[in-house]
Length: 138
Image (cartoon, rainbow, N blue to C red; front, side, top):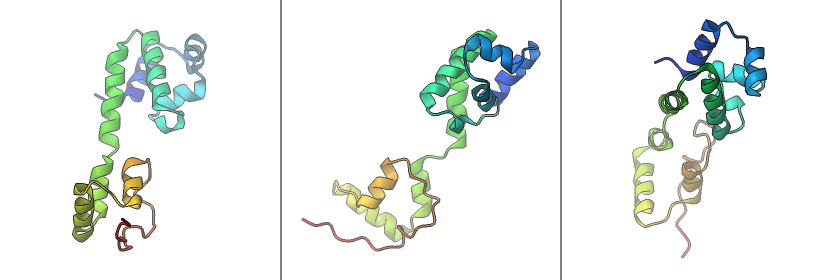
């Protein structure tokens, strides 16, 4: 199945509806509908809003909202790699051993903890992975 945005756009165009007509009927702003149709979900403030807009848009077009939202979730799953796999790619084996050691002891170095659990980009050009880990203060 194609992306949910492209699918919704194709369905809208097959019904000869303009974005303006859909916007007026669904009360979703045109620029948000356009972002959905172009699969630019990051332009919408929250994934909760994206799911809500997809639900409203699908119902307006007479489609199953559950199928569209499932398509959206699958689209995101395929598009965004997991943070854990990204972390493993960036870490060299000795640093990965340190990470595993600290994880098994029930504590994680603050920088790695922050990168793993917060929404931080691992593609930044900082040297956090090149610095040696300090021993934990007890």
